[in-house]
Image (cartoon, rainbow, N blue to C red):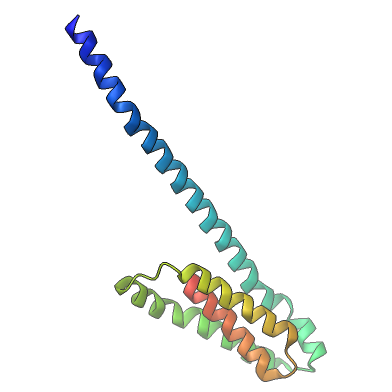
Length: 136
């Protein structure tokens, strides 16, 4: 009879640990799902720039050199800043970098939408690139 009593005690003691383990797994899954969704949105936002090149070319009467400079501006900020930002955040964690990156990309898109001059297009492209670099 004693082994049965011991088994029941062991089972009831393990139940709260199992419940907290399940809760932790659900929380981790929710966080991973949210980060994955934000990553998808970020990638969509950064791909919009190249998708609207024909519109920018026609509306702002740009030549291919200017379109190339827009691409260069975006790529330099997105690609070259990414490892630098990574080194900084490895040394000093920044828990709010995800919303900062998303906000930078969103502000860049808004600047592109309301740009009245070519230099504003360059600023918008660089903000999108900076947001992508921060996010990744």
